[in-house]
Length: 340
Image 1: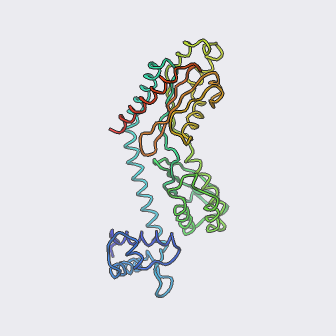
Image 2: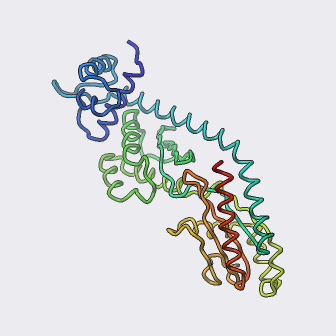
Image 3: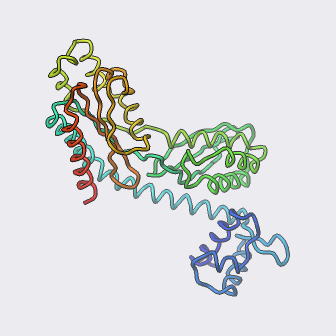
């Protein structure tokens, strides 16, 4: 008997409905739940075939059906294939866009530095408040499992997690279904204690593993790996006597060259509820070497949640109006470049 696309869609509907309700699923529910536009009689026939093929079972006479381990396995395998395909397509797209992105951002800091006569910086866009897309737990050996975590933008991380005892296939499947049902589509901010407690309760003796996976998810979504920061106009600092003191200037130029301390400035701008222009004067800036400066930053967005920070660093007596106008013009140009 062939497992055609219609049977697969009905099986997926059964599994998804069962994961949501925990109750056996009948043909009438599937006729309302799916977009197949099939009669209950046709769905009953297909469900009978699926039962005969071993993908679903009927726990009680006259009850609906629930997925078997074989059904869960097919569901999870197809989910993994779908995510792998998405990742491949995304990588191909990003290879095409990365070179162009780098050229544009490097040009922006040069132009801003020339137009304002101040030092400038810009970060590559990152997914902000990005959501979890998929988790897959797999056994490595008796003492370890591998958690593959895919976040929005197809950010992929692998995390080895210790386990106290070997987990069988059925347990792994149930844990995968539990984690994906509860966490998929959630940001870290949306994963609350009630969700975690509920998952731990359902996981029983494997509750510690749930805590480890949630911690790994938080690490992935908050990771700053891959962020680049481009700077320009560092020598403009010597135009201003209050900044050109040997000690101040060298520390400021070191910050612009090494860039690690600029990540904190980028994150503060991105995490602000106000996505407009921010002005940090003196001690207001989170970067120690810029306490004698004013720093003006703005958040730019190029679609699909990708956001970055652009900043201009100068003396406290900087021409604020000119700087703000330059930032607004730059953001308009970025929008035009990446939304053609």
